[in-house]
Amino acid sequence: LEELYQLALQRREESPLIGQLAILDQASANELFPGLQGFDRLLYASGGARVDGHLLVTRLLEASQVKLVKEKVTLTPLASGYQIGEEEFEQVILATGAWLGDMLEPLGYAVDVRPQKGQLRDYQLVQDMEAYPVVMPEGEWDLIPFAGGKLSLGATHENDMGFDLTV
Image (cartoon, rainbow, N blue to C red; front, side, top):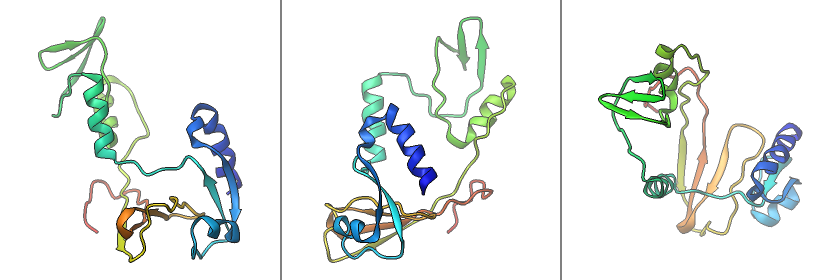
């Protein structure tokens, strides 16, 4: 947990929205998340938040006004830019996720990017969870509360599963 705290301090220098950081004991954490059990200490970040990933990507694409290519392509380097299909571009952003290695290998690049399977489990509670913080205790699981009593628990971090979508 100390290593994670130090890493968070370093990242906060470039991302001040992380906010206040503190290692909390169970009693202090229960002031923020009543009834939380099963840990001795946790890392608290006041700027931690839930993000609607789909909405974020939609808004970023709208604001950027870039040409989006949603198909498998070959990237060909040119003297000043890149060719994709019949079109030429001065710059490209490769948002290929776990397929980045496949995309860059023909160009002579090797990257350590691979698929990682993550699974969450959703629970429906009577109590509204909107005001509760996201909790990431030591270990491999997180508590992610939402309005309306939804609580997501997870996620697993499964390497070497490829693109297997089975539970």
